[in-house]
Length: 354
View (cartoon, rainbow, N blue to C red):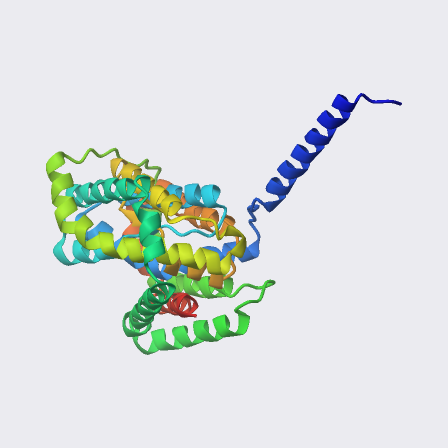
């Protein structure tokens, strides 16, 4: 059957367009929710849990709001990037808040301030210029320094926290991780976390307190005043901004390129925009200021996370805990053994340094 030349050209163009669309679609990362993604979900627990507890207690924040918002941000990030892109509490802010018992409105105002600052840097293109100016050797040095700091916390504070019994527990967790690291059938984090849960249930968890804290709670709406935003900017956002530029933006972008070569086109501006949006939204619902971080990405990857499924699963756990056990957050968090968190944090640090 004869086809007019114009019809042939149209069909050829349509076929080429369809092929191009199929190629783009096939290159788009797919979410997975298998046991490896579940194991990878726990890769950043050693960093996140102590900071969330410390900030919540020091500032008197609403536990249900903190957990639920933190979890929602994890889920949104996983859906957007489709990578194990982490969401972490801001470390410099957390240190100041815990040390000085900063008022909750000032903390939330600081989150709004740093979100606005990062959005300005992203939209003006400044972040991409900063990423190009900083040599790769400097980025590697940032990763090494942060890894050493995390390893020091893991060994100097967490592993030693429970005395002789804690050392024994940490040794078992360490052996499990070494034996199973890289095992796709039985990812290392799953038996290690199960060990921690069993230990908590036997030695730390108060069943009656757990039952008493059960109850449905939604995040509470907050509206920090201008004075709180200004105070938060001066006290919290200014000390945090240099660390965020180096670790949350530049180092994270480099680590994404290292671990996921197909995503080397991810820009500092894109990471900065999601950083900004999270901090412009979270404070209104009582959530702590957060960032992306190279250490969290290294931790999720080290324990098996390869897609956004790992952080979606991780965030879902926080959402469930916040909605139904927000009132007992401090008790639940403190029940989990620090020596096990220390081993998870240690291997997160090693992954970041290597």
